[in-house]
Length: 174
Figure 1 (cartoon, rainbow, N blue to C red):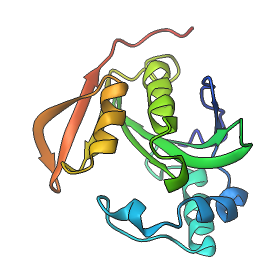
Figure 2 (figure 1 turned 90 degrees about the horizontal axis):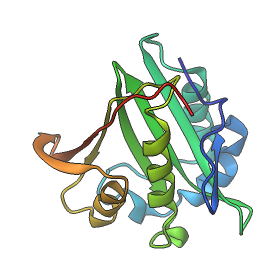
Figure 3 (figure 1 turned 90 degrees about the vertical axis):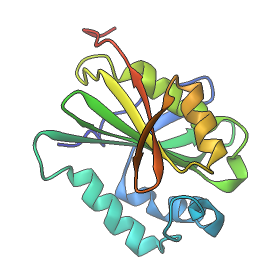
């Protein structure tokens, strides 16, 4: 199941827009800096590969018990895409991930977007009770984003990354 067609929260400076295959050209430019992959591995994807990836994400998880939620960050003041956030939801847990293009790092869009998601995901229809992220221990910027959203590091590790968590109470909706 996917929520890629659903708009995400709106923040003071950002619109969280549904992921669309046709946004791959602009996002390929946003994600083109090899420095973005220092802690996560991988490399920038060419536009055609990113388009194919977005097509798979928009189609949704092949597992009906898993919900893929993917949004692109549009900075209204610049009227341009600056990054993306995602939540993979299963069994009341949402694993969060984010990336912001190099020119916008340190200006707060990742913290703003992830904090908005953390505030929204306990609401129906998501009903999330545990937010989590896995962050490389040397990725201080991502640790700051997680901290801003209320997540805290745990002793658990996965593939060398620290598991960050925040328990939340589900809400019927706002």
